[in-house]
Picture 1 (cartoon, rainbow, N blue to C red):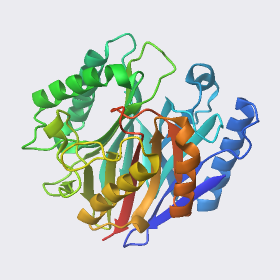
Picture 2: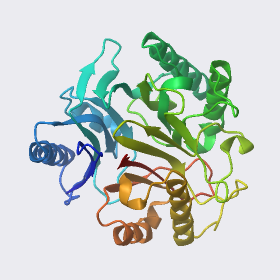
Picture 3: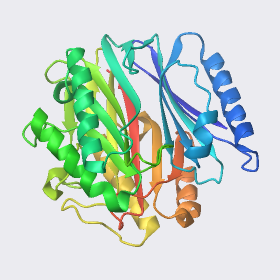
Picture 4: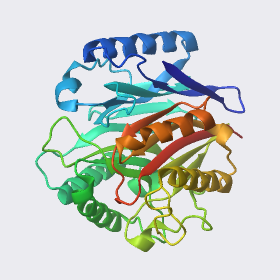
Length: 358
């Protein structure tokens, strides 16, 4: 099944997000991948030659056995993470597509995308096998900083979004945070400058010696004021108040459109406390309220949201959460995954991306 949402800039240029999933969970893995690939090809054909994939992520139920069988056409940056779809299938695919984008694979494995008058740098599947989580995080961010400097950017000036996938989030998340804080402090990302929109969540790599994996998205050549922090202080406090370093949301303005990247958001109040502990329905509602407040703060609405990724700590909550999302977001591409949130009291977390013309 394909869920696609097409968004238009003020010039009429399109971009789109798609979630491609399987209807029949009894199919063997290879047949599920073949079905996803068939739907993906049909999707690209239906959108026309001008629409180009710029980033995609495979969600797998067993990366060790499944990742070697994934197709790779080299069209765009690709992330692979073991976060099982909770509809009991083995695989799902998220694709971000942009009209008239030009995609180039660069020598260091990153992908450069020319679009909206800027160069966008995508990095999928970064890891440091064999390293402890603190040093892995520190070295990955330092490597990304070096790569951006070679392109006349930096984490501070260019990096819009990161995703951190922690193999044992209940044990290792604190060390991942220490590594990120150390890197950010050395590179000038502080409460008085800015942090980066991010999701830090449970997720495994095919190489089980990788304690943490990372995807990044950066934009080269942004001018002052073009990228902005988005906060909703009545609902959410700054993350540095409880020792972590990421933005609640980040917006980026271009000539014909604005993007909004909402970080992983849970049922939290403006003092950093878990709200409705133990109640999945109430936590989902509070999470929606928090995300809605961030959308409002950036002058976006739910109608501008192109995709949603939902993370559940307990698979037994899928029946409740699946019904709630199906009722509220029938026309928005979303996927619900098994991925423990960084604090045990949070039963659910979501992230989203939005676009509106300007």
